[in-house]
Figure 1 (cartoon, rainbow, N blue to C red):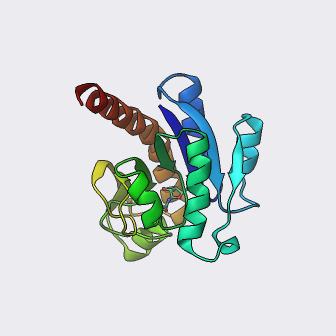
Figure 2: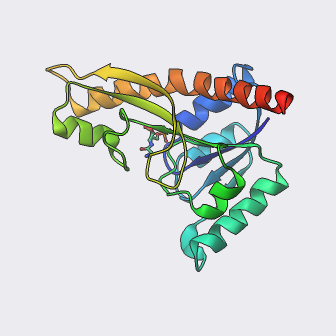
Length: 195
Ligand code: GAR
């Protein structure tokens, strides 16, 4: 199974995935990082792990379709089977969705459908909820919608700060994402054998 990770920012989830693949906790090959932010720290993480990275910025293309067509060429060239979004802050369009139906996974820092969007932790904290969490789901045309693969709850304590909540959520993401990715790969492989 050949994987591409898409990321826009810090890249802690990317790093955890790369390490899980090295340790064979995820049985896959990490072929490629796709990043839409030339200054993102995730690019440094990829460099230090010698994982090929491609920077693709949608603003350099006239349409989303043109952008995703070029993206697809990179995925085709690397024979990518599965796309893993790890802090990729861009909505996936029809061109990619059609080619990778049920083969794009995302992690989101809230208990979806609550608090979708780019600031799930902050929004949950500001709303004063007593629990929030992490969701891993398949990607469809919506924003953080799509069938849920796994969810884990996090309690928001009375003395919680935004920083302490962020720390708790990221810790859960890092333990949860590799195992959900591996379970999904096993499901895909079983389906392939039975087809
Ligand atoms: C993670 O918390 C991830 O859940 C979130 O971005 C962060 C990326 O952190 N994704 C979303 O909010 C998607 N809507 P990282 O760059 O350190 O992996």
